[in-house]
Each structure stands twice: as C-alpha cells, then as structure tokens.
Image (tube, rainbow, N blue to C red; front, side, top):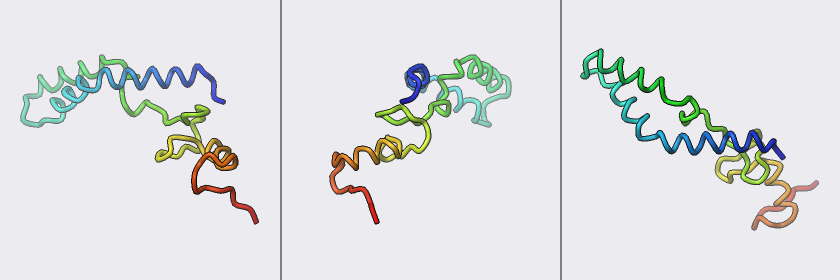
Length: 101
C-alpha cells in the first residue's frame, strides 16, 4: 500500500487539473496563435505561469485504484500488476487464471 499522503496529493492534483482545465486551454490557445500580436501572447503566457503548477495535467501520476502503487500500472485496467495478479489468483476476474508450468 502506498503512502496515503502521496495518494491524497495526487487526488488534489486531479481536482486542480479539472478546475483549471478551461482557463489553461484558453490561455494556451492564445499563446500558440501566431496571428495575435506579441504583447497579448506574452501577457497570456504570464497568466499561464501564474496558475498553480499542480493544475497542469501532466503532473498527475497514474496510480493503482486498489493499492495506490505508482509503478507497474495498466492503464486499461487502472490497477497495478500486483493487484491484478492477486485478484486473478482469487478468481475475481472472469476468464483470467494464474499460469503455472
């Protein structure tokens, strides 16, 4: 099990990302538009820099829904390889069995 502080910090980042998504998207569109004059684009980039760093989407860490483990994460299943193996061994996942030879 991962540290609860790390899990909560990541959840905080997810909430902030959702909260500032529209504002961030509009400012980025202004900054990237070459037709807008340079001063307006620069002002938009300054506003973008003033937004909280944790509101950026790429600061969110993929973590296992069950254990909170950050490594060995399967995106499609939203869980780590260890949690997946444990559930498969218990027979909780239909069609999946533990391989043995």
